[in-house]
Structures are given as C-alpha cells and as structure tokens.
Length: 289
Image (tube, rainbow, N blue to C red; front, side):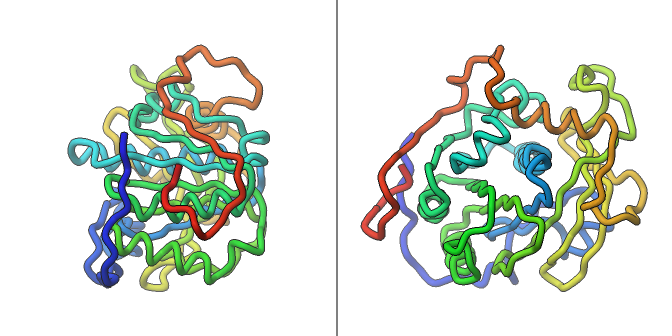
C-alpha cells in the first residue's frame, strides 16, 4: 500500500459543507447537524486509562459504520504510543472483524513517544488514500496543545481524511477538534443471537457529547449492532458518562477492540499491517512511515 501526500490547497470550509456520516440515533444526529462530519478532526476522551480499550472499540464501530454505506473508502492508519500499548494491548484482528471492520484495511504504526505519534498522525492526515487516521495518546503532553490540534484539524480539512484523536485524560483539554466525546463502558441492554453472540450481548457505551459543531451537548447510552452496522440508543441517558457502569457491555467492547497486554492471540497478527520507527521527531520528515 502506497500513501502519497495530498496536494496542498486552501481549506475548504469543511464545517459548512462537510460530508456527514449519521449515527442513526435521531437525538444525537440532530445535535451534530445530521451526523459525524467527515474530513474533520474529532476527539474521543476516556477519563480513566482502563477505559481506553472501550473508547477504541467505539472508534472501530464508527469506522465500520461508514463501510456499511458502501465499499471501503481508503486505508485506516492507526497510531499509538508506547505507554498506551503497554497498558491496553494491541489491536486484535478477530475482535475488529467481530465489530464489522476489515482488519486488512488497517496500517498500524507504533510510536515510541507522544511527539512521534502526533507527527505521524499529522503526516497520515495529509496522505492521499487515507480514509481515517487514528492517534492514541496516554497522558497529557505539552506538545498536544491547542495550536497542535488546530494544525491537525487543518490537515484533515485540506485532505478530506477524518482524524480521530483518543486522549486518556481525566480533565478535558483545549482542542480545535470539531467534536469531543467522553466514552465510558455501559451494560449491554440486549443479547445477540448469531454474529457476536459469544460476547454475551451487544457492545455498549455511555457517550457524552462534550463539544459539538452547534454548541449542543448531551449524554447517550449507545449499543452497536455489528451485523447491521448501526447504533441504537437504549433510552435517554441521564448520568454523566464518567460515572462507571458494570455489565456485559463493559467486557464486550474491550474484548472486541483490543486484547489484554501480553496475552497470546489466536488470530494471525499479520492481518493488520504494522510499522514502527525509533528515530526522533523532526520537521524534515516527509512521510508517515
């Protein structure tokens, strides 16, 4: 797979004419003006480190939902820093497939430091042929400030790639991302017969829209149907998603998205293309990997 930088050009004012991917949840789509805007930067926040895999599962479902509308459009570049991988483990190809996402589309990049991960994230957003670029950072870092997120947002708007930034942060940080969601596990409200039934129920999340393109916020209890590739709301959410919940959805989303650190995998890890680098970040680099 060869990724080329997208040609430089003026920012297209994507916030007004962005392509939209509806969640299929009327209340959430209304708050977002029709759905998740593609070709923009979006931020996912997990208040606790142990919720990182849960938030990753939510991002996987988002990307799989886009595939349900037609044939896959471009590669997915997934960047994670070393501390994040040590705590939450690696992507699990069988789990990705169970959530509805083809693991063969993913180019996984392991970055030793936060600065390296952010540099690679920006480079991936500027590449031709990338549909989604994902970056996971474990803790707050000075290099990830408002200016850095503004630069990432401009890259996404220029190239048309959609950026998903996952921060493991107890306190929200200033961001130029178009939206910010707080993700926490939730109990599954329904069991599944057939595809995905071995998880004991559909993956479920408590999702807090903390920042929206029209200034509207709200809380939701969402479940994911991998067979139909759609979200469903399990009633109106009244509690903030940073309060923890117990139940089947907690384990199912975690197991589906990522394996435990150090656990042996039954699936072929070669199903996910991987890359890594050890050199320091610098302004003279010209490609993502």
